[in-house]
Length: 129
Length: 139
Image (tube, rainbow over all chains, first blue to last red; front, side, top):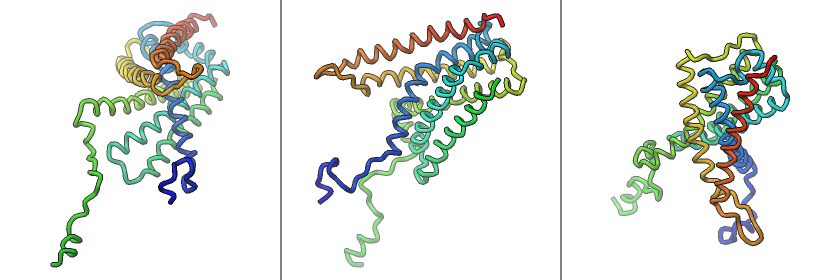
């Protein structure tokens, strides 16, 4: 009886590669966003408007910063991993809030939005300035 | 009506009690769990604003936010608050999730958490310094 076999010997169970991939991206995205995003919001979103000079000081400084390929790569990775992390959390949050009838649609909507957002960010970052 | 027919006519009894949509309002800890889950909305919202700024720069219409943009400052403060909420709750779990083997034992969870929060502090200080320094570069 397959049901009485230990899970690692059961031939009817297959590894959930898709599920493990999104969980892996969720974990990494959460860590990267937790460490790197607060300082970006603090400087560009709060201190900058309050008068502290920073990389978004004016269009010349902003463009000069974005001209560095490493900065582009950093921002793209930050966007991608944060979006994927958010998609994974939103998927389960919406399920918890009662959207339980259309899991596949929810998955496509959340992960699809994350990928579309990443592509838009990539195009903008790598064609600017 | 026979017993079998009477039983058939009863509503189906499920083993699992159906979960209502307001379960997270029943306990404070459930509510905080949902707040933690919703922190990503603010993180994504701020990054979307940032991508819009890159688009504005590309189109030659970039204008940096000023001290009179109260709505934007309030938006950023709220986003920062929830991003820090995410950071604290996520890094708090690092000691539970990450297993770092040392010989036949594992690094204590408190040490892993200390490294995670130390990393956050280090990145915040160094990141602040670099991003502010760029503002003073003469171009």
